[in-house]
Image (cartoon, rainbow, N blue to C red; front, side, top):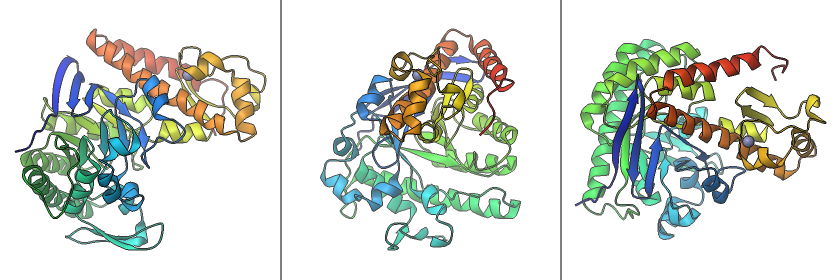
Length: 392
Ligand SMILES: [Zn+2]
C-alpha cells in the first residue's frame, strides 16, 4: 500500500482568489505560493540558507538536468533529492518535457515518447511518460509532474488538437506508472519518497474548447493536483489571463492548481484573482543576475548611471537583507565590476519581493481584502511605469 500524505485544504476564498495549505511529506506550504527554480538542485545565486531566511517553503527542480547530471540513479543512491541537496522542505520536479521540447532539432516526438540528444554530449535518450515518472520517483520530489507535450505558440487548431489528445494519452500512462510504483517495486526503480504526489497538466493552447477537453480528460484520470501548461509561451497577456480564467473553473475546487512557468509580479496577482494556487518562474532569479530588480514601484535596472550615487535601498518597502544593508550605489558598483556578490544580493532581493508579494496576497485573501490589494498593487506599478526609468 502507498502511504500518500499529500493533502490540500482551502482555508479562505475571496472572489476567485483562494488561500490554503498544502501538506506534503516534507512539510506544509501556504498557498498561493511561489516556487523558486532550482534547476540543477540549487537556486542560482541563492544558498538554501538564504532561501529559508526569506521564507521559501517549496522549490522547483528540473528533471531533465538532474537526469543528465549527476543522474537520478546517483541521487537515488544518495537517498533522494532532499537528502542529496540538503533541503528538507517540499520540492516539486517537472517532467523534463519542457527542456526536451525546447531542444528543437535535437528531439523527435512519437506516440511512445520523446527521443532526444543530450545538449551536453549528444548521447541519445528516450523520455516516455513512464520514464519521466520513474526518474521523479528516484529523485523523490514531493510533487511529480506528468510528461506532457509542450506546444509552441502559435499553433493551428489541428496541431493543437492532435497534441492535446496525445498529452491525455501520456497522462493516462504516467498515472498508471505512478500507481504501479506506489504499490510495488518496478524494474529496479528506487522510490525514495513513498508519499510523492503527482499532478496532471491541462494543455490545449489558446483554444477554449481544447482546454475544456483537456481539463475533462485530465480530471477524469484523477491526480492529486492540476497544472495549467502551455502558457507564457509568447501569447498576448490578455489571452493568457482569459485562458486561465476559462480553465480554473473546470478543475476540482478542493485540489491545488498550478500555473506553470509564470510570471511577472503582475501576472501572479492576476492569476491568483483567477483561482491559481502555485507558481514557478525563472524571472526573479534570471533578471537579478542581469541587474533587473523588481520593486513595489516597478522594475529598476541597477546598471543605470542614475543610481551611481543613489544612497537609497533598492525598494524602500522591502525588508530583505539587501535592502536593509546596501544602497543602490553599492549594488550598481558590484554589478559594474562583475562581482559575484551582485548576483547573490540581487537574487536575494528579487526572490524576497516575490515571496513577500505572495505573503501579502495570502493576508489580503484571509481578510477578504484581495480586490483592494489588487487595485493598490497595480496603481503603485502604473505610477512608476509613467515615470522616468527607460525600458531596457
Ligand atoms: Zn529587498
